[in-house]
Image 1: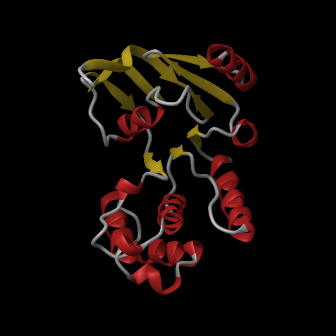
Image 2: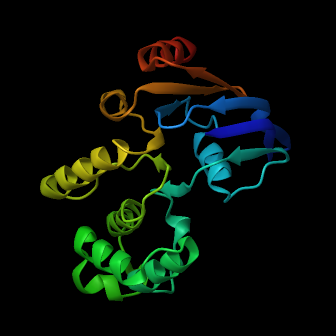
Length: 217
């Protein structure tokens, strides 16, 4: 369960206030895979980062009774001067999971080879995505936050990524941002639409997509 209580967030942009969420009060059901829809610039990534605790709201709060991942695909999750392995060790300590087990999983899954032991600042964007995705999938969360990344790399690696994501979704919930409606249909069963600072929940994913597309039109 994730509950928003009078959540408010805005930014100053070119001398004007840009509202991300405005007094949001909403309870999301546990165990659902939710597509987070909204036009470019609506604030979807910012909302995910607030749920993860990376960005603080201006007012209100977010309450949960389960564990929540950091946003998969968010490069700021890792320290650029530390190696991939050092970042994973740090994450293991923060989340209280077995360090050796997580290291072994991420090193094998990410297929980074020698780069796993090199500073993240030398990684390409695809390599960083492999590291963040692997580290997230290596820890069992009640809710996974996914920002535009569910599969990266070559065809073989994408198949592996999709397979493990489906496996995690069988036991956990998710909030997924992705511009591909086909991928959202593959992973999600319900939807949220963020529009002009308001979030609307739809039990049925197709209803959420239809509402979103109507707003875009």
